Image (tube, rainbow over all chains, first blue to last red; front, side, top):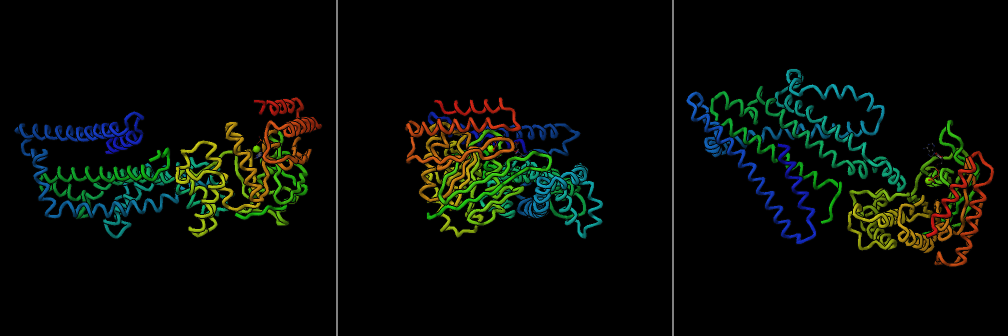
Length: 285
Length: 275
Ligand SMILES: Nc1ncnc2c1ncn2[C@@H]1O[C@H](COP(=O)(O)OP(=O)(O)OP(=O)(O)O)[C@@H](O)[C@H]1O
Ligand SMILES: [Mg+2]
């Protein structure tokens, strides 16, 4: 998922740096080629999927699982959409995901700024944070279920604790690269600490924060599905578990596809935001 | 813009970074009238940047007093603004936004700020680049923007720490002329540090020669030359030779430093602008 979108971004950068000779036709050519590659990659994936489904189908032992193939899956889509399965699962999961990301951003950025700006905080917090970071988020599940009133809250907690670290560490790393002279210049021009935070630190590290949010999103998205296997009756993870129990394999692959597509869209949006909001090596329009 | 200069009074200023360090400089005395351009020359390490940081309110004094218009300087203020060796523009802002950032800190209303930003950009001849990203400018253009960013605050005193040393000779000459004429036009004081004796002769009303360790002000030379000053003008040339001699002599005043080192520094000076 993330590899794909990285390619998209790289291709975008190439487009922005056209060669001197006949730039227009070059842009169209480059754009056309990268679009063709993008479609081609998806077609190859689709073909492999189809081949897998076909092999399941021709093998008498596995014919029952032939619904995993692309054709039954795509046939299941209209039904899953119109009966509300996909929209409901997406909205329940998005709610959890974005609540958790919101919490991670609200907690992670200040933690990151503290790590980056205060030596004492950095030294004291380093080992606890490294230790906590290495705990698989799902292992908090039993504790979270006891602590929180509802499964919904517990899942949001799991996602938040998974995504707070990438945000915090990316913020701190961004801060470490900030030119100290900018603080001196700002102070010299009459900035107070609040100005320095809002007008210098935050814009200087927007790129790093967004990069952190993008990896947080990747982690949260991965944790989301298994976290929803238990306890709740909504969301993408629940739909997968439900499809498995009812042996509706076409539904199962359809939901897998939805997870992949939606995750891809989220990650690409992040990549676009990073490109739009970062000031690093900005080209002239 | 209507700005007036400031009366600078530095009395017995002594500084040391911490108790383990030797004195950076000792008993520095400077008096300057409103509108005067002071240029401090001295070899590396004698405390010029430190002195400038203190005047800007970015560093505390160890002892002695510093008064600007009879006011004790304790912290940075938009009335005395420092410009550094590198432009240090904010790369996420365009030229206009960079120039306007000090006004933003001061809480200026948008409309009035815009007008003043445009004026400051005009002073440094950067109108056509106003909307450009700061990262895409040349070094000289960036330094012009940094100058506008300081001027927009309408300071009474502009402090400059080797602001042109990273620029090529042509750009440097143009900026030397511009900074002097802008300061004269606005009537503001300049205190500038440089390694470059030519620069001092071209830009100063008074040149202060700082030397020794701890640093002291050895000479205070009035440079009464007509504007615009031209490097080839015999009066400029003779003043330059004069200053070079004083600089050389100052470096040989007995001090804790190894004298051979200082001869080397002098040699450097004379070759700096022989081209
Ligand atoms: N932060 C600091 N802590 C301790 N000592 C310092 C510090 N900054 C500078 N010094 C010392 O103070 C002395 C004066 O430094 P300063 O930067 O003022 O010199 P300078 O005259 O500006 O030199 P240059 O021409 O190379 O810029 C030097 O000996 C330097 O080593
Ligand atoms: Mg210096």
